Structure formats: C-alpha cells, structure tokens
Image (tube, rainbow, N blue to C red):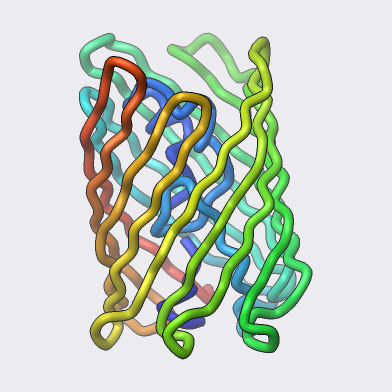
Length: 242
C-alpha cells in the first residue's frame, strides 16, 4: 500500500461535520476515504486481499465535537465493505447525534496496471438523534476516479454522486482531492467539495509511523454555507493490513 494512495477518516464530512458545519447535508455523509473528509479513492491496493483496516478520527467544527471509527474489510484489492460509527455532540445546542454507515466499494480496474482507477460506491446511513432511536437516514451513490501522478508519489481523486436523505430532496455532490508524498513516509493532502449550497475546503498532512501499517494525520477545514461559515480541525489514526 503506497502512502500516495492510502485509504482512509470517512470517509466524509458526514453527519458529524454536517451538524458542525451546518450542513453539507447528510453528505459528505457520503462515502469517503481517509485522510479526506468528502472524497473517495479509486486506487486498488494490490496487497488488500482478505485483510482488515481500522480508521478513527476526532474532529471539532465550531461547537460540535465528534468521534468516528470505521473498520473495513477488503475481500480482494477491488472489493471492500466498511462499517462506520460516528458520535457528534453540539455543545451549544446540548444535542447529540449518532450515525452508522454501511459502505460497499467495487473498483473496475487496477491503478498499478493502468495508471488510473474508477469504480462505484453505494452506501446506506442510519441515524439516532438525541436518543430518539435508530432509523433510516439516507442512501447515496458515488463514482470515484483516481489518477496517479508524480511517478506514483501522488494522486488526483475526482468524485461525483448523489444522495437522498429521508424526507428530503435528492442532492448531487462533487469533490476533487490531491495528495503528494513530500518526505519519506509523509504526504500533504487537500480537497475541495460541494453538496447543495455548502462548500468544504480541507487540507493537512499525513505521516506513517510504521510504513503501510500505522498512520496519523492532522488537518484544518473550512465549511461555508450562505450567510455562515465554520472552521475546524481533524486528528486521525489509522491501522492497515490487520
């Protein structure tokens, strides 16, 4: 697994950031790959065959504090399933939201062979708001595309998709993310995402404490909606090839 195309923090300004930033709408409660918040990778890792990975992250956006954990199982390099749990608390409102996401990813080619990858990612989300009980929240579909750059020291990721929240209209979303290794075991990354009238700007650094096994990332973000904006930070930890 190369640092330039590693997987990871869900995966999205999912609901935690929706609460926090006031709405990238259940979405980026879209599927995502760490260290990004709203972008999915289409880079098949050749060594991802019948292995587990676990990603976790802690975020603060405005008054909202959230914690997420996302175990993922790779059946083979091009097919995987991920389970993600997020708990977010808005200290100003005194409310708590929990979310469970089920994501299934299928890639249609190998980036190591072709220099690019593409696939499809459907997902299903359930939410529990302020202890009201678990219920269906939304479903979505993302089409990811990844292009290798800088002789495999970096990658460009492009996503388009749609999400339909319960009792709400369907919304389309898109994102672009770039990552590049700048030092041994260290990469910089950044992304731009938009869903509805909400825009996300996010970027930071990831370092492999143990190559291809254990990574840590730290980043800053800015979420903007008409008439409002929120700043925040994210700290992520990820274990691979378990």
